[in-house]
Image 1 (cartoon, rainbow, N blue to C red):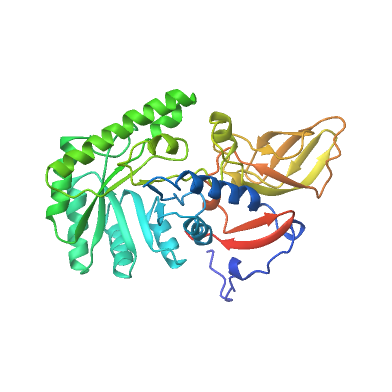
Image 2 (cartoon, rainbow, N blue to C red):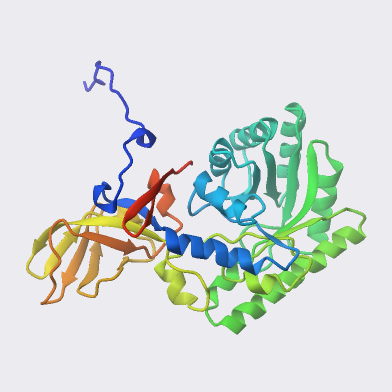
Length: 373
C-alpha cells in the first residue's frame, strides 16, 4: 500500500521567493512582460477614450494580476471585467473592487462565492441569460442580505451565451427588475464573432450591425419603463467602431494588453505591441537542432508554436510537454544557456499556468507581480 509521507513537508510560497534583479537570474520558463510595450498598450487604449463618454473596463482574463489591473485603472479604466468568479475573487483580494463577471454564474457553489464577494464589499456585477438563473441569484442575494448588479447578456452574433435582442431581452430585464436582491444595470453585448473577420472594413461593418442590435434593445428596455444606464460591449479588435455609438458606456478590451502572434497576424491594423513573452533557456544543442525549456506547460501550445523575438537563426519545429525543439541555420551561434524570448501564439492562457509575472525593461527586472486566480 502506498502511504503519504508522515514527515511534514514545508511548502514554498512563490510570492516569498527572492526577487531577481536581471533576466539572467530568472528561473525559466517564466512569464515576462516588456514594460515599454505594456505601457504603450495601456496608454494607447486610454488615449482612444479621452474624448468619448464610454470607459474601458479591461478584461483581466489574460493577466489575472491585480497590480496590472491597477495600472489600467490608473490610466482611466472603470474597474475590470472577469471571466470567472475565481478571477473576481483574486482581483478583490488584490485590492480591485469594481468587478463585472462577463459570464453566467450558475450553480450553488459559484453563486455562493459571488454573493460572498458582494457581502464583503465588492461592487459585483454578473451577466444573465435565463430566468431560472436570475431567480437563483435573487434568492441567494436575499438570503445573504446583499445585492448583485445584473446585466442581461445579448446574443448579437457570437451565438454562444445570451438572449436574443429585442423582446426576449426586455422580458428578462423585467424579471430582473422585479426581484429583490438584484439591481438591473443594463445590457452586455460581446461581439466576439467579428474576430473571424480579418479585413478591417468588414470587421467594422459587422461590429456596427452588432452594436446597433444592442443599442436598439437598450432603447426598447428604456421605453418599457426600466432604467438601462449600462451597455457593456466590444473588445480589443473592434473598440474604435463601438465608440461610434454614444449608447455604449464601456468596452471590455482584454487582448490589447498582452497580444500574441495569432492576434498580430490576423489584425495587423491594431495599434498594440507584443508585450507578453515566455523567457526560456536553451538546454541542449546537437548540430542544427536545439532544445529550449519552454514547452506546452509554459506556453499552452494552443494555436501553434511561438515565434522567437530578435533571432532569425532558429525556427520552432515542435512543442512537447516541457520542451521546444528548434531548427537552426548553418551559421547559428545559439548556445546552451542562451535565453530566448518566445512570443506565444495564444496569450490568454499564460496566466493560467504561471504564478508570477516578471516586468522587465532593458534587461532589468523592475517588478515581480503575483498572479491571483
